[in-house]
Image 1 (tube, one colour):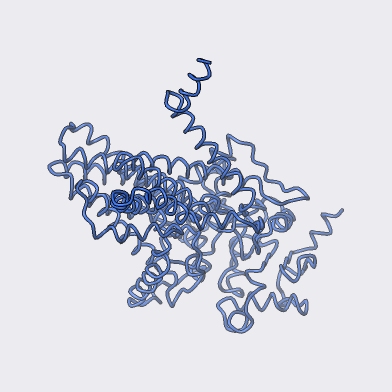
Image 2 (image 1 turned 180 degrees about the vertical axis):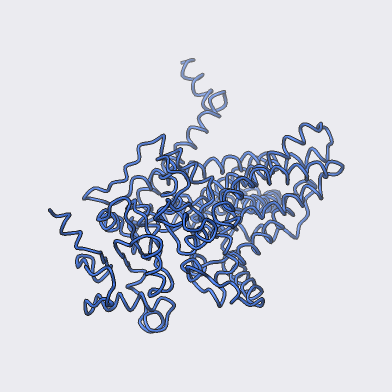
Length: 584
């Protein structure tokens, strides 16, 4: 049967081999994604993810860069800059927390797809968060494909394939893809920067390109770094290793390329910084105060929840202390388990071995320098988000270098594999299989039972939405999780200030009247001695304790009606019994 034989030949050796491999790989990726999302997806539990999502919704609805998650320190900054006109009663609060690019991308997604924000009675997974997670996973797959192409260009198909498999088998990267954070967008931007630097370096060695080509790629690389800074402010520090790479390895073109890279970076970033300064008198808004957080003067969330933080309280010796503590934690904990894979260990060992291709050695030097810069930035920018031990957080910058680290780690393994294969040919496939199994072991255990629970306390979306819906759209709530109230409840919410006595009344009297107070497990689960009696939030914790145990409220407190349905896990106080009005 010539027809059947020809068909089999096309599948095995002919023109259909590549399409079949591509389709098979795509089906495998789709199957893995479906399995992961069905069994491991959890609703957002990173505050930055909820905050970016609610900002994106405001953008999609034409409300501009205004936020419903309000920090007391941002109230202070806006009023200090704009005077009385900057108060909540006069204008919607401008967002001073989240850089604009990721919310803009999500806003476009919300415009294009049907997002259903209301929760049904049988709530399990929040549909908008599922859409955002799938979108970020698509960015993840695109980044893996670009790294595969880069690895194939720099090394060979084997290194490219094993690098892609190692990335796809990283449990940490999958967790980031489903977290709602901007990490996958930054990974894609970082991959584009690597591509640009590789092309510029090779052109500099071969000197076969004209000035226009160098100018185009220099502008592209600088623009990508700028876009990264508009995705996460701390990423803007990547301009240092990028400019240093161009200055060191581009020969006679270094001055032009460095100038265009830095110029493009500034051109992309500066309009947003000007906007921030006009609104708040600061270039980076609240994230610009990250250096002062987690110091002895401002531990935990104290600075963000202060109406008028006194930065003069911070001694100069606090900054070296913060750097050493943060860097020590990164070196001891984050670096050894980068990407939740031991492939990074191959990268560290490979630093002792030179490459024949000078371009590979230069790119590896760029990765090492970037690792040092990002370690310093992450240590000095450490806030309560990192102090709580969270890995899946926007402050985790080292994960952005995981694809490049995996690439060089796999390259060393393949070099050793070639030597082993020359001596024992039969050991080569066994070693390759063992590498894949070990690289993906963490992900494999994640996909095994038991199944993850989608709802992650203290974030209980139906409760949050029901509590928020008791208020009208223009009314104001106060809570210990304002990002969740803003995202799930679509209501403006102020973070409980550090001073429960004076600051509460200053916000209520000067800014806007507070219609409800919503305290969750973040406050009610406080340790009795260290938090209720002696802690930074002892005033709020004591209020919660008094309400739960005795039903007592401070004399003259404007919110005198307590909803018993959420107690003791959560406390909802209001200016009147709104829940009774809802039943009518």
